[in-house]
Length: 524
Image (tube, rainbow, N blue to C red; front, side, top):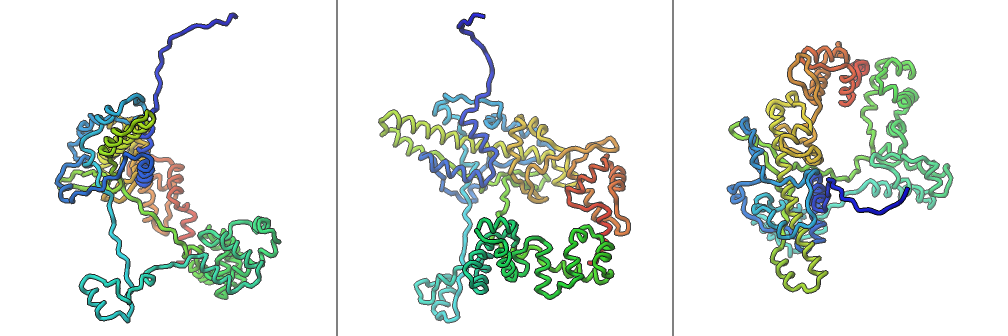
């Protein structure tokens, strides 16, 4: 076969993922905390971006119409048409041209961005002042008048600082008092740094000894001394050892109790007959021993945990209006207000001479405009999806979880004329505050379970709620089996298989009927 060169013309379609489109998609799936961090990074990189610090009065903002608010009622089916002019930059099947000029980008930005964002909320913080008893009368008079004289000799700022003792500090204090040997103290310090938040030693002693270059016996001997530290049960290697250390500290680790602690797996199964036979005790003694074990702390190190739990901040608020409709509002506190410094751009562009500087300035201006546009489009898209979710789940908001409808991404995507992937990104890590509580937007998307009467399908979440309610209200003398739950649900119109009931029950962490029967027999 001869090899020849020739020219051919081919026509094909391809998806162009421009940097601007990638940025819009990335912003859409970020949570509010991740979004704030991303915007701060962009402000550091781009000299034309800045946070708008101007703040208007709350009354003025309340009187002005907002783009981040919608009302959903029974006759609100046509509300989505109001957003037809908004460009769907976040759809993955939409392409953007890389040769878009700065003028085209600037003209694409809406004039009312300032209505969409508000200033970041600033929480006022007051530090408690520790006033000593020997404060002068003049200082007290200043306090009653609403001010404090910080120039007074009685003011001591160091006394106002709080220094909470950590778990490590507490254990090191005991180590310094108890152990004098240098080698043992080195091993003890390493073991203190090895324990987890619950106070357990999870690593094998052989691994620790190899790391420290010492014998396993030396590590075990040091560990035995550390296990006498407070709180009781610290430096344990498993739950049985943790409970045994606490019982020994109370002088309650007799042979029967030791046998019970060594058979925690049987206790977890609530097999009381087997425990009485193994430990050679009667039912009354077993009840007392179980009650005593319940009073112990399975995680002795958690009392020193200093980790601060971050509260979930909602992205959308859903409130009921006087006429019975729903008002959907974006949480403006989570939306950073980013502006392009036009004055600085004009000033710099007039003094820029070199081609490289002009190119860099044009890129900064284009990227800044695209970021502002993407943030605006992100807010609009979240609002559109949230509005449609509220329309679909109106029964849940009014009556509760039993009226949660089956819902999938395709239904929302078709209603708002977007791609399913866009809806998926919007509902990930986004939270909605409703009169029923705070829920992730993914919560409202559940699979459907057929109706036994041929009517509307039931939401899987609502069926799980019904199963939990049936078990919570079951008669202690008549424990409901999975088959019995299936029969009850079919009478109420839910066509469900027994294995599905078992799967939902296990997902709710509800024991089987045999285990629940044993639990009912357990002493309280």
